[in-house]
Image (cartoon, rainbow, N blue to C red; front, side, top):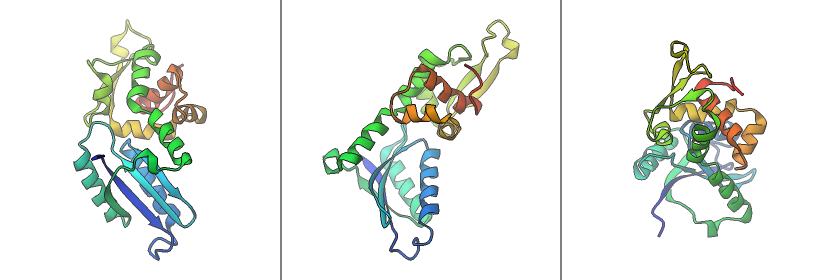
Length: 205
C-alpha cells in the first residue's frame, strides 16, 4: 500500500468561483509549487477540468508538508486535499511519460552534476554533502572565486537555498531548460542551472 501523501487539486470550470479566473489561478498554483522547488503530476488537463498532484520537495517531512500545503492551497480558494499518490497503473500513457520526464529532472542529480563536474572552474562549496545542504531549508554557502584561486580577497560568498533553486528555472536559457526538463542535460547545463540559482544569471562559461 502506498502511504506517500500528495496534495491533489481539482479545478472545475463549472464552478462559478473559478469559471472566470481559471488561468490566473493555475498560474498562481504552479508558481507556488515552483517556489517550493517541488514537482507536479498532471492527471487531467482539459478546458473544463484540471486535476493534478503537488509533490513534496526533497528533504521535508511528507505528512507535515501535505497537511500544511493542502491547507495553504485551500486558503487560496483551491479545491485541495491530502491524497494518496496515484500509482503509475492509474495513469494514461501520456501522464506516465510526463511522470518519467519529471522524475528524470531530479534536483539532487542535477546539483550533483554541477558540483562534481560543471562548476568547479568558478565556484567552490565547503560542505561534506553539498547537495543535501543545498536542498535543506538553511541552504549552503557557494564561494564564487571566478577562477581567481590566488586572490581570496576577491571572492564572494552566496547563499544557495531551495527558494533560489526554484527561482532558477525562470532564469535559464530556453535550450538549457528544455534539456533539464527532458532529462537530457550535461555538465554545462547543470553549471548554467547552478549559476542561475546562485548568481541570478549565467555569468561564466
